[in-house]
Length: 148
Image 1 (tube, rainbow, N blue to C red):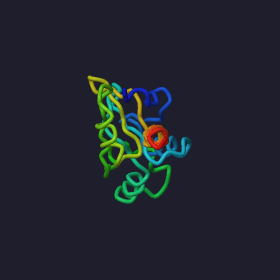
Image 2: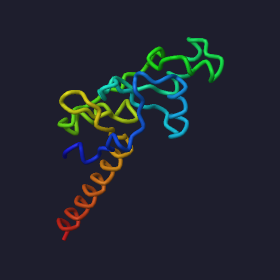
Image 3: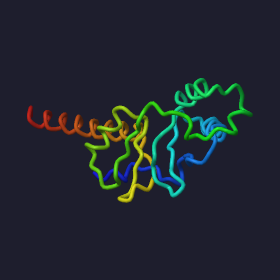
């Protein structure tokens, strides 16, 4: 199975660039209602993911008392705890599943490391569920045929 079948393309994904501020990130995440968001270099390469928890602990560590103060803080000043590892577009399903076990989504990059989109754990689970149902139905059919 080609993993690109599951891809949500970059054009449909919220992301931030490394030159954005803490406030811009907070507002983008609030608007889209995401708990984490990909972080890209200015040339579009995937550099990591930042989560709500990272923002919360970063604001505490950096002593950010209000939104006004967050306007002057680079998102790169906020430490990231989790490492969301990306897969290459030509990766196999096993690589994808391995990453999805511990990540809400799996970033997908091309051969040069440019971000092309994400694959959500939800899409992977939906696929696995459909495959399991097909397998169960096929097993029932073969059992019924064998008992005749």
